[in-house]
Amino acid sequence: MKEQTGLSCVDCGVKSCQTRESEYPEFCLTAGLSDETIEKVRRLYEEEENRKVSVISAEIENEFYLRYTRVQELVEFAKRMGFRKIGIATCVGLLEESRVLARILRKKGFEVYGAACKIGSFEKRSVGVAEEDTVNTGAVMCNPIMQAEVLNETGTDLNVVMGLCVGHDSLFYKYSKALVTTLVAKDRVLAHNPAGALYQIGSYYKKIMKDED
Image 1 (cartoon, helix red, strand yellow):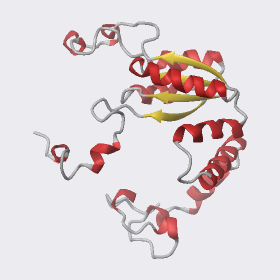
Image 2: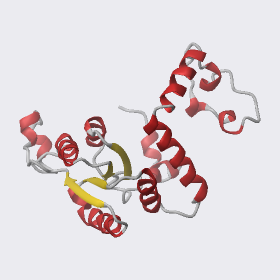
Image 3: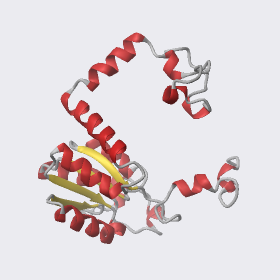
Image 4: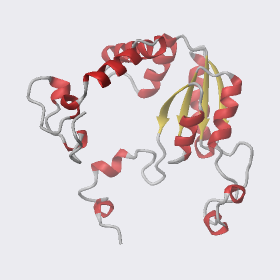
């Protein structure tokens, strides 16, 4: 890869990697990839599971583009992958939504097993959280590693994240043995639509752009 300039894909307005209709900018990551890196990644796509996921994802995107909701795409993906048991790693605050998802999945023929974030009922102080940091949200900590462990032991084929907190979701991804997809990304302020802050960065949420004190 080319020497890093500090610029990357988030600074690009060309998107030639998608269209192949214009020149790559000087800092383009695609243009800077070494033959060794390209070959390494291509070999990973030759692994059976990686190839299957890639092909089925592309089929679903193409066949149902602008027609299927993400819930419908999830069902179709799980069917085409041949999955039987689906785990739901849910925030306790989204248990009702997770129950609805479980009903849908069971109706479609899947076995469903859910693990809520407070499973194990560990105290936050047991992992070093200060007392003052439990005042607003309570003493019982979210337990994403336990969620992953329980779903691993259950033998789920695919795990679905439903609104785990930032960071807790990271730990769940880290310890889940099954593939993971996210259906709901938590945002308590924006009704779990975190992209809303990005759409409103020029008006209601311009305060996010202020320099840190």
